[in-house]
Length: 392
Ligand code: SF4
Image 1 (cartoon, rainbow, N blue to C red):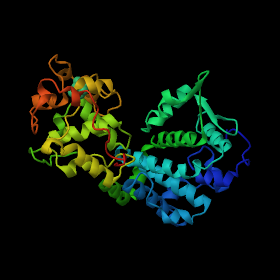
Image 2 (cartoon, rainbow, N blue to C red):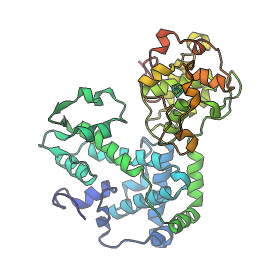
Image 3 (cartoon, rainbow, N blue to C red):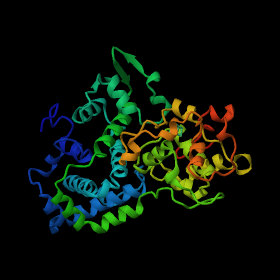
Image 4 (cartoon, rainbow, N blue to C red):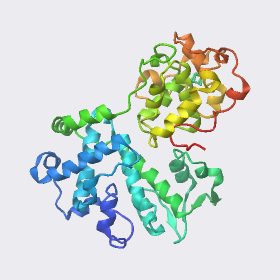
């Protein structure tokens, strides 16, 4: 195991059982590794499979990790490691790796339970094993600006912005709690990538765990459909590229910025989506909170006697990095990777205008087809957005 530091320095078995994603974590098995087929089929691993399935389903129900997996609390280190491996194997083999990103969020938040109270030396050790050369002086942690930006960009809290960090000689110095949050993100990134599996392994997993995979598919957030609200059916296929990208981001379980969350709720409302449909659009967010989301969606959609907030215009979305008219290189569909010529028409100024031009129905048509009023178009929203910002 090409790892840094003395393997017993931090209590290797406990470390690896709590951080089963680290290279070398298989050492908790004491040299006896089951084959993939053994893990999937042998009666000796039935308890491991049960715990692994519970990990998978708990992640789909609540990626923030507030759903406790009771079996894990009493599992041996080897069972914890193998159940983790089983869950990762199954979700990597799922069609489209469905559910993997939500599970990655779930497991990274579980790891954070230990990371947040870890000594700087442990944070440094875990970071090195994940490929991020953090350095600790025992009180604080240093990392390169490039690594900081890579890990902090998806984090929404304002205190993680680079402008607010202590910078010197191309290094960022952070206190251990902030380093632990950055490591949570490093874990999420690592686990969100499917394992490279041979086709015969994918086939075996899908056959053996069909029931579990069907259950995962049922629990995934539903894409916004044609459940119309006040204005009739919603037509997501006619949405502009920026809005489709926002939906994909949430459906994948990735973070969407404050401005993006506001825009999505305001746009869906004006496109005629029902209240429940708008709330459902946020279920994939890693920090989804049902009651807070309902409160915020209500706030965004009931303004002006139900007309709701005006979604931001194209210039504003561009300034927030949310315009994808040049194409989205991360999109699965070839069409979404290509530039959209409709977005380059000189008169196009608003995503609702795009939607209407393609035949979509807009509720309470207003300022979007000419110029959005400065008070709403220039801002990114009311200051609170689904799903985590607390009221008050
Ligand atoms: S040009 Fe406007 S409608 Fe098109 S992707 Fe950009 S922000 Fe969205």
